[in-house]
Image 1 (tube, rainbow, N blue to C red):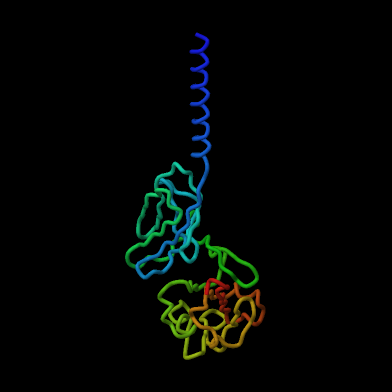
Image 2 (image 1 turned 180 degrees about the vertical axis):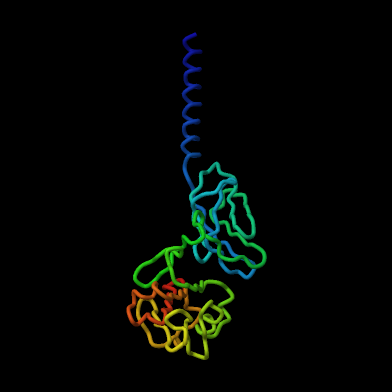
Length: 236
């Protein structure tokens, strides 16, 4: 009888030990990385990462790359775009999972950011678009359509209120209604006299300020300000 009890006790302890080890193992997380691109092999920024059909707080970077930790028991990882739907892949122990959407997919608005809440670099810090009172034009240099442009002036053409003639730029507005003078050009926080040396492939973003939003630059911003941010290091 005592021997039988001892055997049962050993079996019970062994089962508990195995269960405990399994629980610890399943509780550990693994890191999955990858890239998300569209049909032109351009990275999709700000797409939402999903795990087992549930949204996470993680989004893809501006080049479409992502990195997320998941539990070993998780089954699927997915990418949610607000314009082109969802794609999912089974994890199956993989630590790198790439996604490709067909056709053109624009950069996605970051999760939880409402229209007007996006930040705009105004040179002396950042403001939300809805807090800017002047007309603001914006260009995202990571969009694939700009890859074929030859000059920054080509990129500026078509922006609301911006007039480009050769290498001469004007911003329409209350203080520049007669297009009497060029705006102030600021590249990475430094005022410059020309944009001719800047290649479109080096441009991360362009913001155009006018009216009171340009007044932080004093009289130099009276005819508007064009802010250019260049890509850094590995972003080039």
